Image 1 (cartoon, rainbow, N blue to C red):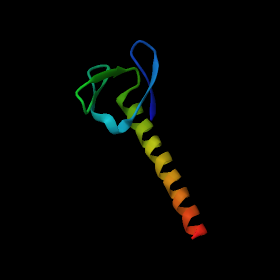
Image 2: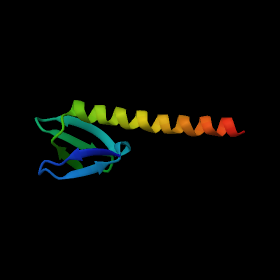
Image 3: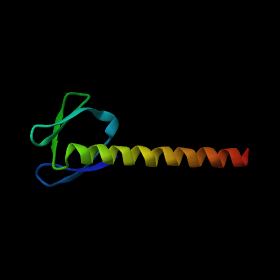
Length: 73
């Protein structure tokens, strides 16, 4: 999950797999796969960087699990 800030200042967490599209008009608007839209304070570039970081962490955890399994087996 990535941490975002709603336009009213509340922090929330979003599963990036639910993002359909994102645009700046001028505020960053995230459209989810169910058609719901969210407006966030972060720029689109910042959201992309958060997603990249989230994916890197996830892949790193998977790699660690696979490494442990191969060492045990």
